[in-house]
Image (tube, rainbow, N blue to C red; front, side):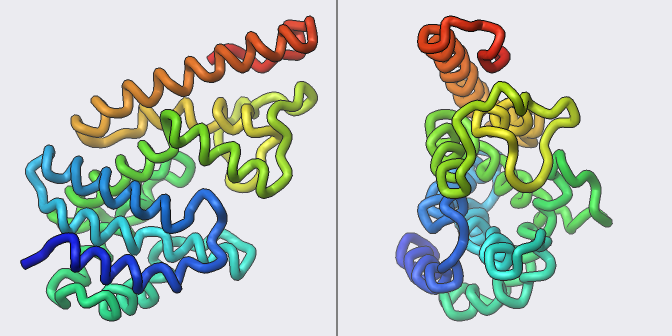
Length: 234
């Protein structure tokens, strides 16, 4: 029987691996993505347990990035993720489908483009749910909280009029401000969602991002009496 107890064992195994990961990709992020991925998978007619398992091992490359100080692709951490599945007691017949799904999520990154051949259909279906769950956690109130937590951790200002959002869109690494990151990445995520269930949920979360940015702009103008230095409207 596969269920909550199996996921708790996997979570415990992954927890040690994620020590040192940045604040936006911590164990709480994995918990939320696992719940969202399972929910989306069930709504899309797929295996919610497999989607949740994939979610718990989808960010091993983030911990590696923190250690190595460079961008790391999920495929580079396949062995580490497989080891976590083993230590977590996940049945071995699920390892490769889960790992294929995790690696396939890289193909859906709007900043990276197509990175290789399509995965098997089953892995692609789980990858789409995992991808959307990961994107949804960067949207809405949760996405707002994560953006400011990460920005604070790396010393980004709330908003810097001298560093407006890049017209080139999202770039890996620090941005000019947390608000610039909203415009360069977070507002674009709605258009990257792959599943019908994810798009439905994404509408509400996108609206929350826009509402926050409108309010931030209003309050900036209140404080500075200068609309010219305020961030752009969403």
